[in-house]
Image 1 (tube, rainbow, N blue to C red):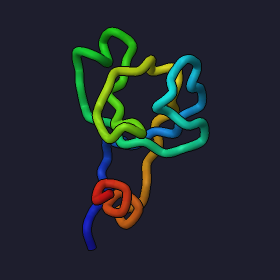
Image 2 (image 1 turned 90 degrees about the vertical axis):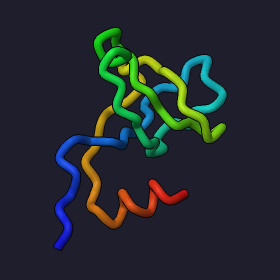
Image 3 (image 1 turned 30 degrees about the vertical axis):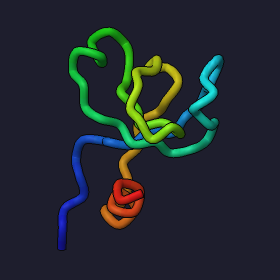
Image 4 (image 1 turned 90 degrees about the horizontal axis):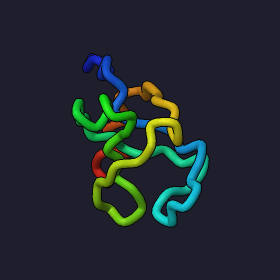
Length: 75
């Protein structure tokens, strides 16, 4: 059995103030970016299909089962 990733690479959007490319209550893929995280941001693959920095406070990190991670990553 494959192990589920220990580091969350997904987050649920809680706030999309002034962000047309984010939808509240939707799960987004997070790309690890230590420098951005140190500044209070997350690198998120948004509705445009590209990754951009958004305030960390707009999201809550979540751990997903492996099948869900694979399904969300392949899209």
